[in-house]
Amino acid sequence: MRNAAPNEIANGPRLADRLGVVAGIGVAVGWSEGNMSASACVGSAIDENTSAIEANLVRPGPNIANSSLSRKKPGPSIAFFSKRSVKTLERPKTLSLGVDRLFKVQAPVLREKHRVQRQSVEANVLALYDIEERRDVQYFDAIREATPTVVRHRSRVGGRGFVIYWDLKGAEVGPFAREQIAHFASAGQDFEWKVYDHDAPASLGAQLQALGFEPEPKEAIVCLDLSVPRKWLASSARVHVERVTDPKVVEEIIALKRSVKDEDLSYLASSLTTQLLADGSHFGLYVVRAEGKVVSIGWARFDAHSSFASLWGGTTAPAWRNRGLYTALVATRASEAVRRGYRYLTVDALPTSRPILEKLGFKVMTYACGYVWRHKPDATSR
Image (cartoon, rainbow, N blue to C red; front, side, top):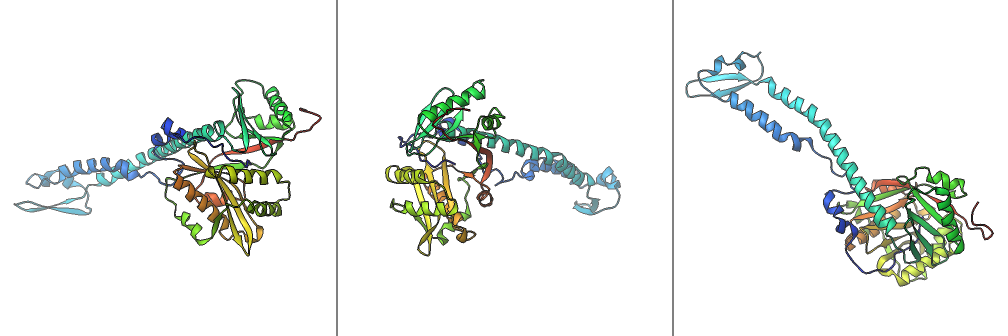
């Protein structure tokens, strides 16, 4: 998982607006928020059928008793009044049969149309994500290097680099991967190659493992459509969430992370401090305190040239889980994204956070797995 923030770049139109993707699709990632109604589509047909039947029925006069309708088997009846007399007609069964038949024919068609439309929306949002959050993304604490075939990011703060976008253009994976290994080895850095399920070739992850890359836990890339009102955004009001401005708090954040997983996080401390002090307009760091200690944390990136705000680093002390702290942190950061005008909110979710996020309305766009190459000073490939 990446821990970084964007380069400070001039404000400009987001790609979604330039391409007309968001305006064109009409609905976005909240795919199951609203279901299509069959009645809206078949209503006019029903009205037409009903009108036609009524046109034949509501004609009081001397000839109606001799019509074929009057010879139907007894059933529920409707009275029609004329100046001469009152005549009784049974309700024709053709009306109910016609409506039932219409629903039987139309409902599967509507369901399939809804499914196709939803898949089209999903594909458009995922394509937008690939462009804005993978190909064009810039991080404040990393150096972005773009070539015709790959976009690489080298850490400025001693962490590992990463590759999240590439186009092999028909090249073989082995030589291409060894080029990336050599590049990061020259910088003395480990690096992560993040492979998404919809990437090509489908065998890329397996081929990277064969070259010596180590797979990390698989993540679900989930997305929330912020244009849909969310009642749970008010949940942050029940928990005091503090936005960090003092870099000294970073030490408490690192202590909490280490209490959950013991590892070297010196690069993370440098990254968070750098972003907090030098890129605060595009970065938000948040904590929840209890009994005088930081017990839950998370941060967010607000890239000026993206339609997506993104959430990172969510961690809660084991003793303070299942109390709504993580949800409050998500709500606070989501509210800030709404205030800034972002359309979507994304998270690279591990199995621990995915169920919570899905309950809040996040939808899975795709899955990803990071493959890590650990730099060895005496070798650049295997």
